[in-house]
Amino acid sequence: MPQWVSVPQMRTDGPTRTVSVTGYTIALSWSPEFCKGRKTDARQRTQCSGRNGRFGLIVRGLWPDGCST
Image 1 (cartoon, one colour):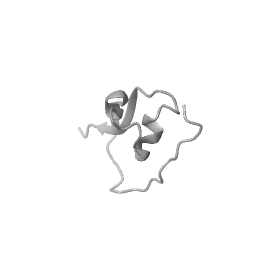
Image 2 (cartoon, helix red, strand yellow):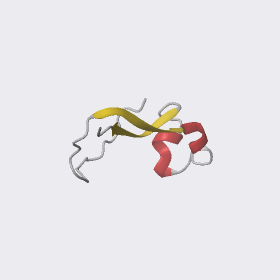
Image 3 (spheres, helix red, strand yellow):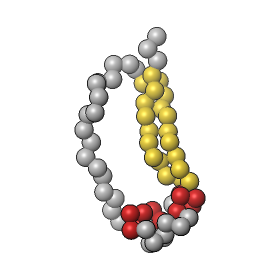
Image 4 (cartoon, one colour):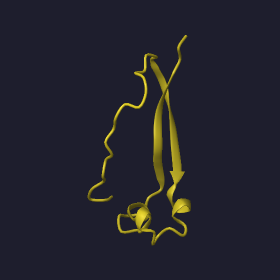
């Protein structure tokens, strides 16, 4: 694991959710496939260089789902 990970600032970009959350949608990527040919790319250094260990599945997004009925 990396010793530190930068966390972006979060701000509201839409209206407040008024529907109850009934589940989540998750977006994943497989790091070994993503990193093919990117090991020396400075923008992908944390994930692909190998200095921070080997990454497998990477969470790209987690979104709440709801039912309005």
